[in-house]
Image (cartoon, rainbow, N blue to C red; front, side, top):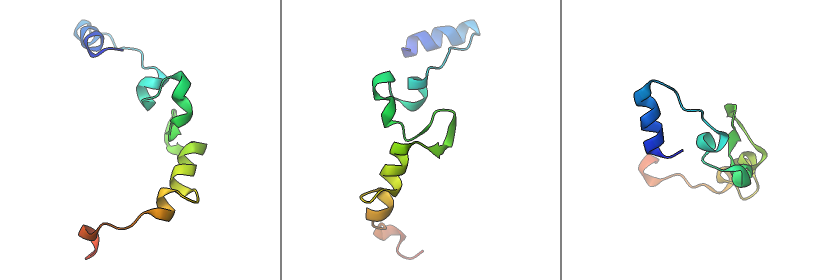
Length: 71
């Protein structure tokens, strides 16, 4: 949905229907890239688990920023 359509609907007092790709940022073809479940943001998808917890994932490869060394 384009922002002008969204604003026009808001002015009329109606609420636009939110599609899955509007929430996750991915269209149907790229839905597999979603990091969390569209119905529960606390539940990672298989891809989200792979990116965070996988062998080469963020948790395994991240280095603490020097700005946080005193904490």
